[in-house]
Length: 431
Ligand code: GAP
Image 1 (cartoon, rainbow, N blue to C red):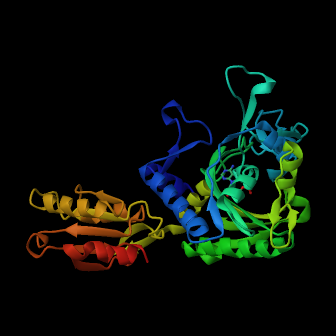
Image 2 (image 1 turned 90 degrees about the vertical axis):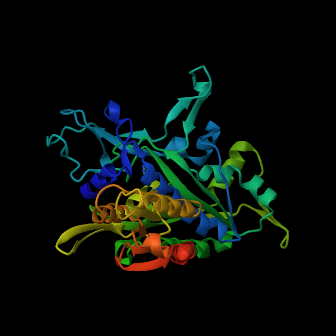
Image 3 (image 1 turned 30 degrees about the horizontal axis):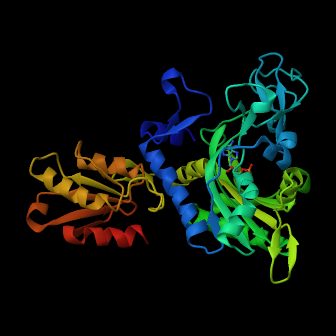
């Protein structure tokens, strides 16, 4: 984990937010490469969950929602964790995360914990200039409620029949008692969620489908099979809204832990919103002339947590000709930079051609142009951030209008005509 955190900081992928003020605990900024990686993960999720399917539509709902939403959804009442404080060192912990419930993990004292009190995880703020009870609003702790509250509108306007899903990617906020492990658990994070609405008697079938489908997605993007597993929740551990939940777990440096949750939320949310708002949230099945509340299956993945997993899983160290090589074997679809254009040396004869090559590729691929340092070191810099291809412009290029293309994983090199370069990269990057 330290290796990844250091790589992230050194290469400006992810680093502590507000750092010049000493940082703000558990908030992180995504630098140029991190922002690209996060966008690429989100894009690949959207492509496969929305674009490639004709039964899922997208949504982008507001972070601030009417406070009644959280009353109806049960979050005000039940979205809390048990908090204990050590009377000796005043550190606070989640009671259910303590290895030894009698010993403080910070100061080592025994029997110093206060009784657990339930701590609501929602961030509270005020809307408008007056800070009173009537103006309280919450930062959403999940994007899901936007999909439930908007279900009748989206269903009507997109003229969808069951089964169909609504997908959303967006920020969520939870006032976690113990954030940690870099971006694994933070107070501000991003979610990628689908609410899949189906007839009540198809709930179990779609729950099984989405468990498998989401596992397929992680594997398709290169996460190693042995590092992924399912974990079915016991009945007593289920969230307040769930009839069944399976986590997809990843083998982090500290062991298997949650990566994504697939929950069978039944008709809990739609019914609660109808009761609380007085508005009809049912679906009308024209064929069978029946009106009912659809059941819902929800695959919910953390985008920021996904970014950590793709980095952890892709990171490799190997020895090449007696030297250590760090290589991020991330799927080319996710790689922050697709092509690095490297003139063999910083030279007034090579630079113009190399820049021309870079300009011709930029419209299609995220490129980086780098002409400083020895070529070997520049290859290594690209390897450790996962750039799939390096294009080298050398003195022969001035004569033969060709460049050397080096592939990241095999380090194999091909001589490719500049006129063929775009097509050559296209077949390999879009494979
Ligand atoms: N709407 C359902 C829902 O939000 P969840 O299991 O609480 O379900 C879904 O969260 C996913 O969001 C988790 O599997 C995890 O990947 C991510 N996640 C949850 N809390 C997080 C946090 N504090 N920081 C980063 N990611 C988090």
